[in-house]
Length: 134
Image 1: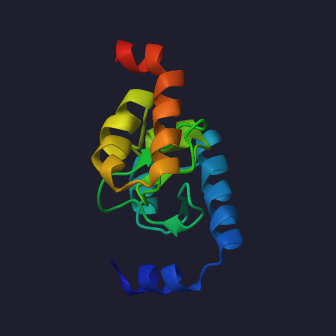
Image 2: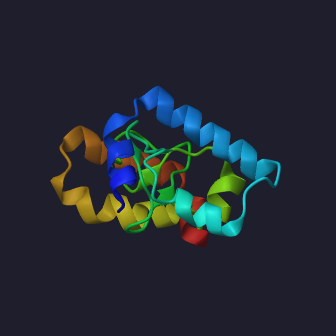
Image 3: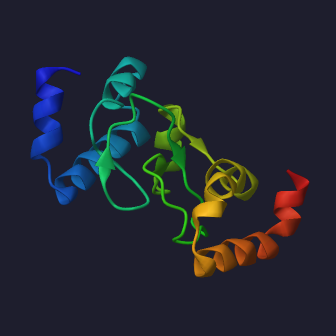
């Protein structure tokens, strides 16, 4: 990470991150940004997680989180679902319900308290036809 990226990480507010993200998403929609520029954007902390923090997506795997996911699924790798085409161009995969359960719910299920377990099981029950097909 460059010195300017480190400085940016510590100086942007949540509103500023959102504004910068929106600017680049719009630039992508209007074809005003190149593939190499898209790759550089991955290092900026402008991508909002499901929990509301802003992160860079240049290291590790990040995923778009389905909108119907209950709050008990918490992970900094889950990004808020917005601007899907922009995220596709950045190489970020959108998870379906089955992948979400497999990757984020089931491995942590044993650590959930009773109410979170019930919520996870209810979500699974409601989405079973979609999950079973995957």
